[in-house]
Length: 446
Ligand SMILES: Cc1ncc(COP(=O)(O)O)c(C=O)c1O
Image (tube, rainbow, N blue to C red; front, side):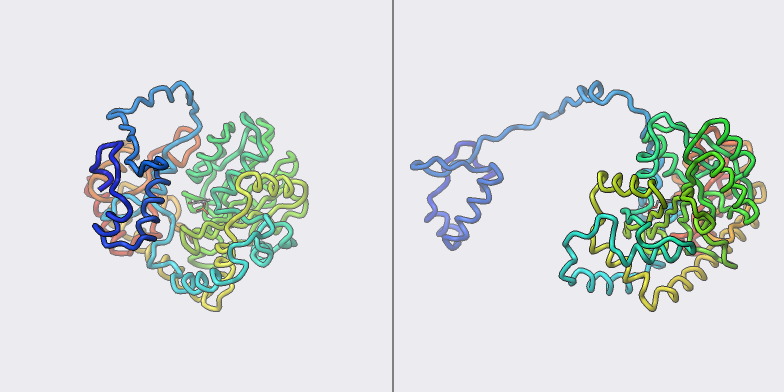
């Protein structure tokens, strides 16, 4: 009724309103008070209640002034946005490294969620560093001498990467990244205004000599690596390279940020323990996120460090966003320590193995001109080299038009890519969907 009355119209009296709409006096009063709070009514004492003047929004707002106000900040890229966008509901999802609902521990999450939200402290404050028992869990799993005191809980791996890059480096500082690497790490480094120094890797991870050379040449104080099933190439840093890498990092007085994002995703024999377990002197900053093994909405990660850098990260995280929702930390702890968790992990590993095998078999049968440089022994991605004549972006666009979402490899390179690649993720598609995806690709590549 209010919307249809011209501004400045007088409302019927309370009594009329009660009779017309058969409402109690209290209800009429509540509705009018609510409309006044929303600015739709004004009360003139002694005169009555009137409809308020309404501001007509401009048909075409002029926001062009913002161009000048914002300036040209080049650091932010849309690549990461594309990666986390769920995409069209009916497309084959080979972009995301997150597990789909079929592989998420929904029962454990529901039970842990119900229990955690009923705890009296569920909505109170925690120590900003995080829930002590959860920190102790992360520390114990590093396999070294860390304790819960060394761990800071962050709202996911991305937030931790952002904290490390921003609080340990200043704009313009060099940061060394294995190339190719995680799109989100490139995005964070660019957003922090850092100078990206790519160092190549091969089937056994980053090349130690090239890394030592880059450290010497650039004076970088931070190296970012994923030694276990690197994203996107799937390499595990070979055991005999690990000490050489650590020695180079230590010799140059640098930090190594070890992003152990695939800690739970060995699809065959166990991969080596975290590199942080080989370091006593605080060179390795260790990161383990739960969004991959649990669910994308589990925005919880543990960031572990030793020495003054821990204080820097702890204070940095507090200045970023105080602390992570206690209830979510409690849910995380309950899931990770539930009797069914290890069984659940075993079953998702089996299903992921089936998916990987189906994808790799379909590629070798239907895409003879493409190459899988490394069949990953774990993780969730297959890194596919396209024939030289193709552009990865063009193939990804053609695939999207045919209902298949995948990631062009160029997004994963901090600089010009050495060739056209695609990243195919098997964490959100069933084997038969993966086979269909490969058939679509075969149709495109002819
Ligand atoms: C290698 C790597 N590190 C970190 C992240 C970010 O993890 P989170 O979802 O916990 O923010 C991702 C997400 O895809 C990733 O692939």
